[in-house]
Image (cartoon, rainbow, N blue to C red; front, side):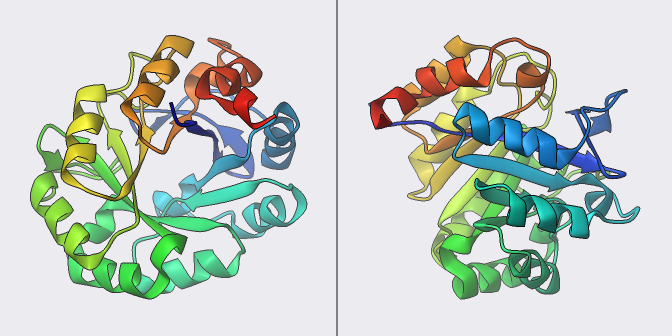
Amino acid sequence: MTILELLPAIDVTGGQAVRLSSGVIDEGSWGSPIDVARSFDEAGARWVHLVDLDLAFGRGENSELLARVIREVPVRVELSGGITSPAAVEAGLAMGPERVNIATQALDDIDAVCEAVDTFGERVAVCLDVRGDRLAARGGSGEGGNVWEALRVLDEAGVARLVVTDVTRDGQMNGSNRELLARVADQTPACIIASGGVNSLADIEALRALGIEGAIVGKALYQGAFTLADALDVAGYEELS
């Protein structure tokens, strides 16, 4: 069985690490994003999923702070939040992360997304926020296009990686939508990162069994449903030592 790459999430607003539930910020803060990233690195994570919520919601940005996280913490960073245009892709990559995630909202101009995929290759992933068979960007209003048609177009463009989220499960700790993930994986050669609803070590084990590349873990980790060290063991990291 292959290793499931785990990406503990750090969602940032107003300079603080917070958590989301279905696109709404939970009360309270988890403190400094740099300290949180260091704790994940020290626990053995190889990646973090770093999100600028203020940029995503159009109410400011935390770019200087996030750039510090990328510079100062020796862990690979998947940068996300508000990356909806070619200029935003370039600005995000200039901060130095391993890759950036192009937001689902950007798929309103799917030709521009395909151009970014062609230009930047492995350094970009495309987010598919999904409700049923429709795209449904978290924090947005209304539905987007058909998921499977968007997937077809992205495949033709050679997309390397997709971040797939069932928005009804994001931050709800009710389990990942493995049926959706398996269906997407069956229809594309792209690598799949699961997002939304991961709630237990058993869930991580089941995601690993799907053979997808990775999973973002967030609220369950912060609320103590499991430790990152235990999650990494279940994901197969012990095989690396």
